[in-house]
Image (cartoon, rainbow, N blue to C red):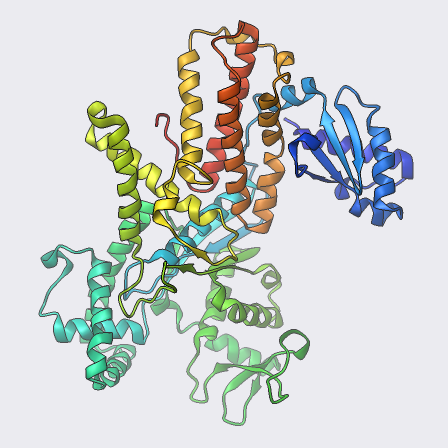
Length: 579
């Protein structure tokens, strides 16, 4: 079904063409007015002004006059500076909104690989990983909604000196203990030895040299070290899978750094032969970064990136170049998205620039979805000291809050396994909403108790609004003749109009979020739909009014509830039919 915004956009375009002689369908910009009393839709005239060469405020005045001619759709058009605020005809508004929910588009868009999580196999997932994961899932959902063919991937960092530190600590101090013998999750078990290594190394500096020696033996294929590495990696990955299942993180493809770290060397050598790269005085292969994009060093010299050391060994960005090219070829990609913390922004700028210099057209569509840190109450998370907010502990704490609420509300009226299920949906939803409600670029401070609140801008508030609507629908089932619905009766009560106004903007809202890779836009929309639902519930009785109006209100309520459910699902958040 054609959306309200599409209908209005076509009307505006026809008026512009008639008045100024310009075809400009693609520059009609519709927005939600900053205050609902201004109207249902606002037309922004800045883009039109650039085309018709007229002051945007003058365009707004003329458009407002022209648009009042379409009274079947537009009840009122008021110019306000460079905007035209439209109040839609109630019959048109409610007829267009009722029964129309968000629908995923057909898969006709680009082939996208979205990489997220990228954990190290020396410690469990922490709160930073959780933010990474919920962003990855939500952006995947948004891209799929908009018609993209998305392949999700995870790069497991399973090699390097940090891995050897936990291996060495277990070998020296583990006394043969295993996750099974200690009753611990494998990732927690191995992570404790990573922390132990840091503690022991303070008193015994020789441990650092021993870890380097172990890394050298591993890279040479020493059977004893390789066997130990495989065993401990299995423990950790098994733990990761359990946590990912709890949080709903899934992957179509998993890469391991131990398989990819050799990639890129041949590509760099061929690039050197083609003149893309240079040899430094020391014999290393380097890439000079253009001044106009990357600036100069403090001493005025050109910035350079080392791609192969003088002895021919690779560096981290070399592996990334090789892995990016392999993924693009294996999956015929049009675009790659990397969900990685903002401390890696410069690295990805350089990576994408080098890939473009090598001639890969798809590199122009590579995108670093950078996100800010998640802080503890007392500052930045640190893993070596063992003060990290563990993902499993975080989930247990918030789900525990939710379980206490479920037990208090339902007591023995529901079975323990059902109580646990409800608590999980509420608790995990609370975590996800809290992390997604902020713009990804923002640094946030996570507050477990605040995230689980049923008041304010939270996941539980939205989930409760949905469950409340479903409760009304269950009570009305069989008591209201739905075939008698008269949509023309809607609109006389402000709360009906407010709810419809929120629903009108949802398609463009989700599209904007998908293009911007910003789930916070959807989280904000979900909260406002939930709030409008609650206001509607309070002010618009259903069973106490005559049948035609009751049925119309039930149809509006159904539309709003299903739209809210879909918004939450786009965020990776589940709902409950009863709360």
